Each structure stands twice: as structure tokens, then as C-alpha cells.
Length: 142
Image 1 (cartoon, rainbow, N blue to C red):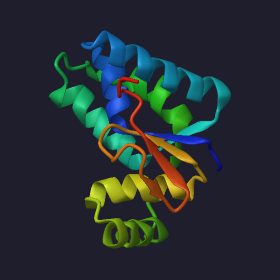
Image 2 (cartoon, rainbow, N blue to C red; image 1 turned 30 degrees about the vertical axis):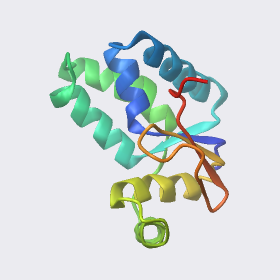
Image 3 (cartoon, helix red, strand yellow; image 1 turned 90 degrees about the vertical axis):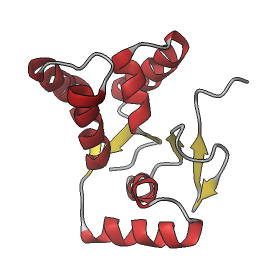
């Protein structure tokens, strides 16, 4: 189940909406590379958040059929972490130790469970290290 990096929900939303060209290109490159190399992953939480946003919250919501196609072609190939008592316990430990929100802690716990060394997210603190996991915001200007 090991993967090099974990992709947070916001990257999928930037890829789907394509409202910000720079963010779309960055997200698209990271997601495509992850699928092509089989070296990236996501969790059930990312799948749920992405589907909910695509159907209800997106600037231009997807149809049910478009959402099913995205699930099959993009999300499912990356989905490696499902819920378990161990995952929730680790998320609670991360939350207590690093004072993250529960949902951010669940992302971190899922990335750790998958053996990732990096999380791509703009929601977590860029440059932070959590138990050997590096947080990277791929949208920050260099």
C-alpha cells in the first residue's frame, strides 16, 4: 500500500473546476503523475469530499454521469486508504499532538498509513513535518 505522496481534496477541485489556470495546471500535473506512476494515493475522505463538491458545491457542478466517470478514472486508481479504528485512533493522536483539525488530522493519518513521505495540500501548513511526513503546498509562488 506504500505511495510516495498523498493528494488532498483541493487539488482535485482545482483540476475539476479549472477556474484558476495556474492552479489547474499544477493540480493536473500532480494528479496525472500519481496515476501514471502509481506512486500517489488518496483516502476515502478525499473521495467523499471530492464527490460532494463536484455534485453540489462546485462553480459548475458535474452531472451524476460525469461524477461517476471522474470517480472511475481519477479517484479510484488513487484510492488506497479506507476507514478503520486504527486510522481514527492515529488521527486523534495527530490532532492532540499537532493541534490540527480532526479532518486535517485524518488526512495526515491516512498519508502516514499509506507510507507517504509527502502530502500535497494548501490546507495544511507548508513546510511542516509530522512524523516524517512533509507538508507541501504546491500552489505557493517560488
